[in-house]
Length: 512
Image (cartoon, one colour):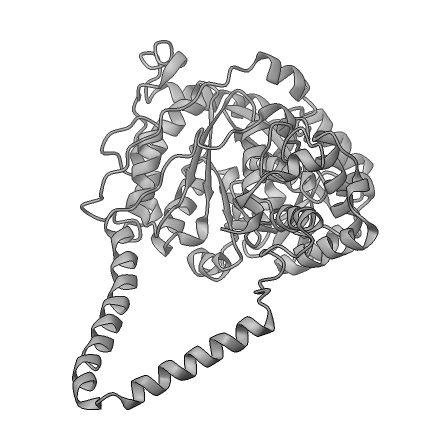
């Protein structure tokens, strides 16, 4: 191990109350630079779209902290299923983990969606969050895509955290359809790195004065602005100041005097001469078979370690293995103006640790790619017993006949105000794109927004969690790139709501 973790005497030397560069220490705070906008965008897109949301970044870019902030800032009505892939994972293992988290036995995709639909009827959403997703196979991504699209409103919001290597596989799985949205994390600039270091040092009882300007520049250069590498580089600089020599993390060198090196050279030459003077007949037969045997053993070791994970896939549900400090994480984002502040929500929230689900070997693969999507759409909703507090009340009441009645009633009452716009959407080519700019429960809000803006704004009504949701869109574009380019021309008041492109086909499907 490096000197960074061999000795922590530097805590006394610098009079730190704790290690300021521990990953998530006792006074950890969510650093919002270039991360809070991503968190807000994730919540916004999860609320108004069915896209699989993908966050990419290299190791140490802060994906895990962002994932924890996403969980911490979720509403009480959200059930978060967090899966951290520790080995190559396929659709069967993903289905097993999701079923276990929902307390379902021997379920298939249709069964999972039926259970999610029952939870939606009772007002509970499901967020499926997958970390280390670069380990997922194509079938696992196809499974997540099916869960995200679902059937009508019966779907889960899927968040995927991975490095950029997942992007080509996502494009292959999507098959040119608009089914996912990728957000690439950005490194911090030098000012943000300095601000981050200052926040860490103040929390540990010190100030930024422990570093010189040159040291701060070196830390930024070594870390390239990625949070995980900043901690290692900063701690290496502190230890270097104490010991007077660079730590192994910044420079690996052997400080051996030249006279000792000369002695070693002489000894090496003497041993070489002794070996040459010996008879080669006795040594050669003994030496030759050893090398192939060792090489064969070394070559076999990586093969066995690579095959074992695919036979028994370990995908532990990371509910509480890492301490998620909910208050500092959730305070960094305010994603819902219609709800109470997150501080008030956290005061009322009881954080109950989830029990880890034991992972067993999957005997048979799940035919994820064989059945078409229409098979799922024809499934009949049956009551499924819910977990925890809502188990006794809704399960005996909800029947397949209740869902059409609860959803069909708003259609008849609020359809008249949006009939003209509905016809406009149905007349557009399915392959064209538009920008979704606003979603509201009040039709008057949507109507006023359209009246106050140019004629390219339209709105339609959709069903969301059994209630009417009025969605305002802007424009009609030939492709996704043209829609993206049009965002910059929108007024600032509209751009702040994070408009995002979607196909006319997806809207036409919601109008049915």
